[in-house]
Length: 212
Image (tube, rainbow, N blue to C red):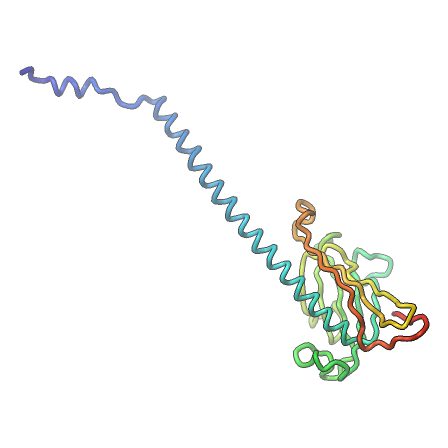
């Protein structure tokens, strides 16, 4: 029996060299970085999808609100908020007489409390030319504090187009509501809602229809 052999074998066993340790640490950092990047990417995708869904839902609710207001109206007028500068947004005024539309009453202001109209408007956000917020009011104007926010990230100021019929048809309003919070980088993600809505309390004539 040779004493000291286990001790000699222990000394002869080689450990990790500095280069091997550095290589192992580098690989570990790469793997952890890839995992972290994948997690961050998945989290950003989920956040973007949630924001996209919220924008689309807000746009649908705004169009539904617009549809009910226009159906109740007897006249409509669209004007630039700042004459000669369409980038500052538009106002869209609807004449809705008290009691004219019972479907839109308490909580909406039309047909209750003597309100004679509804105003919608688009307002540029932070001076941008492709981001507008949509507001609605029944008390004064969209510049007042009573204006109720409807939807953000509207990509164009002119949402409404009043169509004047020349036969026995009611006046209608063409709606083109497009929203996209990443219009500059992701124009393909634009969510667009269009509709043709008649003013049901308008009076059809046999000749040219007077439009506001």
